Image 1 (tube, rainbow, N blue to C red):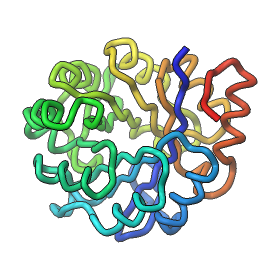
Image 2: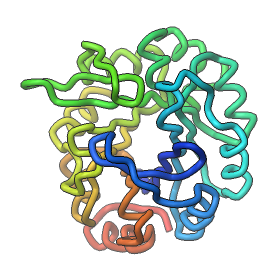
Image 3: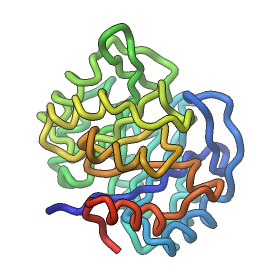
Image 4: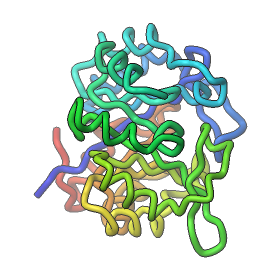
Amino acid sequence: MLTKRIIPCLDVDCGRVVKGTKFINIKDAGNPVELAIEYNKQGADELVFLDITASHENRGIMKMVVEAVAKRLFIPLTVGGGIRKIEDIRMMLNAGAEKVSINTAAIENPNIVTIASRKYGSQCVVVAIDARKNGNSWEAYSYGGRKSTGLSAIEWAKRVEKLGAGEILLTSMDMDGTKQGYDLELTRMISEAIKIPVIASGGVGELKHILEGFTIGKADAALAASIFHYGKYNVKEIKNYLKKNGICVRF
């Protein structure tokens, strides 16, 4: 049985970790390097670093902050935000990232997914999908959730898998920061529609939400932010809870 992964997320703006609700009402949550060190100690399986305003502000990701975080980690680091071209991916991998997450660039130039996967391996290429429910379906958004694309989130996930993506980082914009749990319907539909791993994101507030992400949502990994940043739970507590409930995790 494959182990399920627990992944803290550092949403970074102006060099600080922040957290919002439904992609707005942003509040400070701490220093990215200090939090990265702490989650490394707690036994996180991976860490995700997202420069959440880079695409919207039409700038590159903060390389120095990424390097500072990567130097203190002994677990895989995924970096995203403001990645526009292959050179940006190379720069982030050289800065210490093991994977690069792309959203806006993939939507505007899907070929970047194929080129990156061929050049660096599909295991390095994570496509982030920020999805919001629209009627009976879900639409993918770009530019940090600011721009609607008209793309079906489920069909887009299928397409990027074919293009060479190695993993999907799926965030429900409707549930983000609500602490009411993942969008389990969306997560399950995409998990069942593709063969590559899906990271569930957006809405964790209780231990049961992560369990549901795995059992009902069929996700391969669970990403969370505020429950870690504000000290409600630590990684070890979550893994112990999951183990008691029959989920295979790595200690």
